[in-house]
Image (cartoon, rainbow, N blue to C red; front, side, top):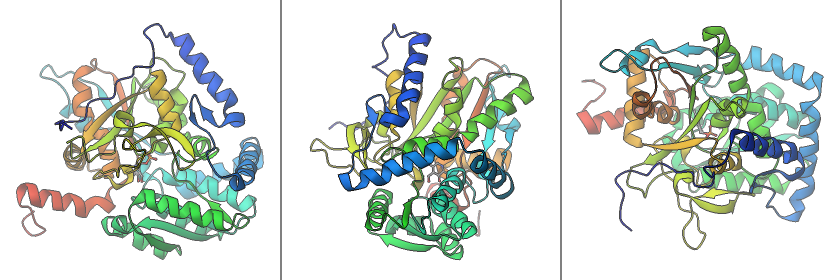
Length: 435
Ligand SMILES: Cc1ncc(COP(=O)(O)O)c(C=O)c1O
C-alpha cells in the first residue's frame, strides 16, 4: 500500500446533492423517534450481544426511559451537576487565540472555548459518570465496572463511586497505565481497584464487559463513551448533551445568536455528541469532528470515520478499523483517549447523512496546539482536546470575519505534561533544567 503523507479528509458520499434540509431533519427526527425501540441510528448501533445479555440490556433501557421522565431523579442530577461537578462550565472567549488566527487585514473568526476541562476531575467524562452511577444505585447494583484509556473516565467513575458508596473496578491497558500514570494514582486514591489488562483501551473494554457479564445482578457496566450495545450510546449522548444545551444558552447571552461552527475531537464520540446534539436540527450550525491522524502516515492512526469500514464491535454496528479479514487494526494517537478502533454509531450516522463533517489532525499538530493554548491563553488542554484546537489552523482562514467558533475543550492536560516535555526534548532538546 502506498503511504499517504497525511490522512485524507473524510468525504461524505452518501448524502446526495438533492438531499434538502427538510429531508435531513426528517431523517434525524425519524431516528430519534425510533431510537428507544430499535437502538439504531440508521443502519448503525443495535444490540449485537449474546442472548444472555439481552434481558439485562432491556432492563437498562426501561430504567433509562424512566429516569428521563422522573423529576426526582432529574432534580438530584441537576444538583449533583451543579454542586459536585461544578457546572455550568464557562464559554470562554479566547482573545489571544482569536488574534493569533487573524489574517493580514486583521480579520478572522472569534474563537470560544467550552471549558469542560474545568469540571471536577478535569474532563467532560464526569457528566455521564455521575448520572450513570446514580442510575446504577437506583437499580440496586453494588459494583461498578468500567474501562478507561486516558484515565479521565476512570477518575470520574472512581470519584462518583466514592461519593455514592459503590464499589469500583477500573480496567486499563498496561501501556495506558504507564502513559497516564498520574490518573492511575488518582483512581487508587479515590478507592477504586485498578486492574491492568494486557494491551490498551480496546482490550480493557473487552475485559470490563467480561467482568460485568460475570455477575449481572450485582455489577453495573458504566460505559464512558457513546459506543457499545443499546442503550449505551443513547445514554452517554443524553448525559453529555448538557454541554450543547449550555452552549446554546451562553451563546445567546454573549452575542445574541448561535455559534456558526462547533469543533470537537472524536475518540469514540461522547464529547463531540455532547456539544453537537443540541444543534443537530440547526442547519446554520456547522458540526466538525476531528479525529487522530496519529503519525500522519495513514498507518498508525485512530481515524475511524475517515478510514474505517462498517463492522460490528463491542455489541454495535459502526465504522471500524479492521483489516480485510475483519480483524481489528490497533489504533494509535498521542491523545490516549482517542485510541479506539470503533466510533459512536450516532457519529457514523451523522457522517453518512452529511450532517457532520470530519477531519484529521496528526500527533505533532496536536502537540503544537497544546503548547499554543498554554502560551496564548494559559490553559493546558488534554492532548485529546488539542486535536480539536489544532484543526483551527486549517479552519480559520476559510471562515468569514467575525464567525463564532466554539471548540469543546474536553479536558485538561496535567496527565499529558510529561508526554509534551518528551516531545519538546526530541524537537528542541528541551529539558527540565534548560526549558
Ligand atoms: C479529555 C478527553 N477528551 C476526549 C476524549 C475522547 O473520548 P470521546 O470521544 O468519548 O469524547 C477523552 C477520552 O478519554 C478524554 O479524556
